[in-house]
Image (cartoon, rainbow, N blue to C red):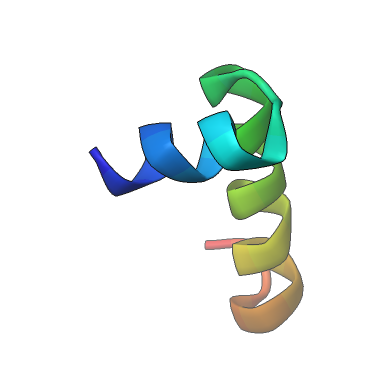
Length: 32
């Protein structure tokens, strides 16, 4: 739900948001 709202506010798709979130997680934690 929160992800949907963030995507709505930033005017990007949920798929794009998921990719960005995943990329950020990889940067922070390294590849799991």
